[in-house]
Image (cartoon, helix red, strand yellow):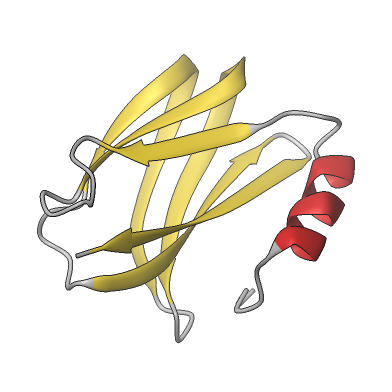
Length: 101
């Protein structure tokens, strides 16, 4: 599935779909010149998949996590630009956009 639309409306729909689970992602340095981001979930994920897509829908990164609430993403080898981070935790799907400068 390619997800190319994002914004407040989609975020609202995702929040309903995700049963009020939330996702926060922020760069280690601001702006993210290092490509290192901290990802924080509102609840501990028993098992979840983290995916990162570029703006043309190519999957650039994937990782599986278990029994974690926080994860550091090392994306410093990726090209500069905007990306969508998607976390799939059971039936909840959480999406945020990031920019690597």
